[in-house]
Structures are given as C-alpha cells and as structure tokens.
Length: 337
View 1 (tube, helix red, strand yellow):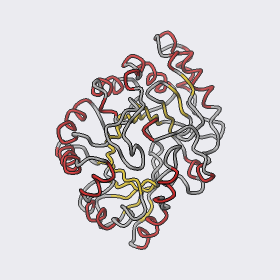
View 2 (cartoon, one colour):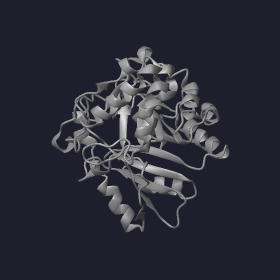
View 3 (cartoon, one colour):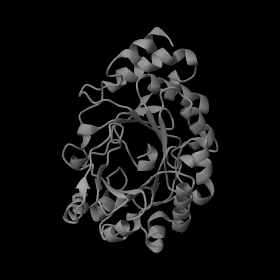
View 4 (cartoon, one colour):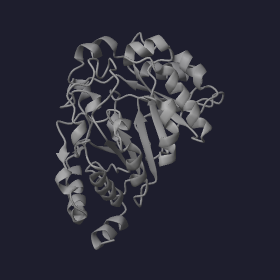
C-alpha cells in the first residue's frame, strides 16, 4: 500500500461530498443491454446499446480497487441486465477478492434465474434484488414482454434452499396495475424472508406520457401500511434508498422508494458508474464524468483516486425530478436505475 492509500484509509471520511454525505456504496452497471421490454423502461425493447464495448474485467478490477481504498464497502452490479455479461461470475469473484469490499449485490430481471441462481451464489453474490412487477402471470407478461414469472419464483426458492437469508423484490409502482395488488404481495411475504420494495415510477427522457398516466405517489402504499400496523425501521448506513417497514405478524418486509418525496436525496449514499466507465453523481444528472482513461494501468490508481475525489465535489444537493427535469437519462437501463 502506498502513502496516498494509507493517508486516505486513515481519514475519518474517506469519500464525502460538499453536503457531508459519505458513500460506502457503488452501483456498477455491467451493460446497458437488457433482454426484457418493460413498458415503463424499454417498451420497444433495447435498441441502441454499447454491450460490446463495456468495461473489461481488468478495468472493473482497477475501478473497484480505487473505490475500496476510498471506503466503498458494497458493490451492486446492475445493468441493463448484468447477467448478459458472459463473464458475470468472473466479475463477481474478482470484486469479492478486492480488499475492503464486504458485499457484492446484484439487481436482475430474473431471466433464467431458476437455472442460474446457484452459480451466482457460488461465485460470491451476497444479496439479490429481482424485479417482480406483478404476481399475476398475465399482468407480469404484459409489463415485461416475457412469460417468465414462474421461473423467477422458482429461482427465488432455489436461492433460499441454498442458504440465501433474504431476497429483495422490486416492483415499479403503477396506477391501476400493481398499486391495487398490495394484499397479494402482503400474503406472499407473510412467511417468506422477502423485502418487497415498491419504487415510484420515475420520469425519464422518453416516458413522459406513460409517466403522466401511471405515476402514483408511494405515500399511497405507506398510508395503507401504517393503517395496518406496519412500522418504519431504522436504515443501515450502506442501505439503499428504500425506507423499510416491518410488522410483527410478517416474516417479510415492505420497502418504499419515493424519489418525489421531500428530502429524498438527503440520505443519498451511493454513486453510479456506467458500463462505459462514466461516474454518474446522480441518476438524473446531465451527464457522467469519464474515468475509463484512468483504468488502463495499475500505475494510474493514485490519479484515479484523486479524480474520483475531485468529481465528487461537484455533486449537488439533489435532483429536480419534481420540476420535470430528468437530465440526460433516456431510460433506466442506460445507467442501471
């Protein structure tokens, strides 16, 4: 370890922005390619993408090593669909071996999960988030373009059987679609260690009409939970953006991700790097900051660390979604949601 690394590791706040927020959590997109065509994200399927020019395993290793020196302890692998990378398991193994990285998580659409989940866990995945936008097979197919709900549910059962202690399930909240299915989800998680997370539909550059038709505030679900005796839990320091709720009669939990709520960005603790190596300070920023030119040699690590620290100082207080501003994010698949 060189002197710069020692001095950084010895400081109390390793990676901190001008608002005093610290960042132990990095979301790393492995590809912007997705094989689902979810109506809220890629209704026409994945057209333009850069799957063949994504960061290499060596570049990913250098990137994660630099962030680990700066205090990042958790890496979440996203996409697009991250498992479309043929070297997905190699990436997990390498990241897991980086000193300082405690957890490797993944977010997946669940494609062929029943056949692949055991290999993901064997490679070293610690946490899995999987999308289940409806428990009704017909509605699920209408939303995603795929009749694959049962293979996803089967994959979750295999993960539990292999010893995974919990799974987080994501559902994008849509008016008249799944906001009326709360009881179905509650029945499902009553005896299962699942955190069911409802994510407010977010406006992006290409879904304005869809957003206007289907957006519903997460507060609608929150109010129902409170009426039924659910209690909000304390957040862990490296937790994601969800506020979680628990109930003494349920094994599972409910999480709400409400980007349009007041002070949503106050607790931001995560940064994003795209599959092309751009550091994105916010999901809805105007653009990213290219780091790829600093990922070509192990000798560049000090310069890479300094660049990350410099760029972080540009992070602003919050997004402007409530004003209809979506930055340059055309779809969530572009930088991993």
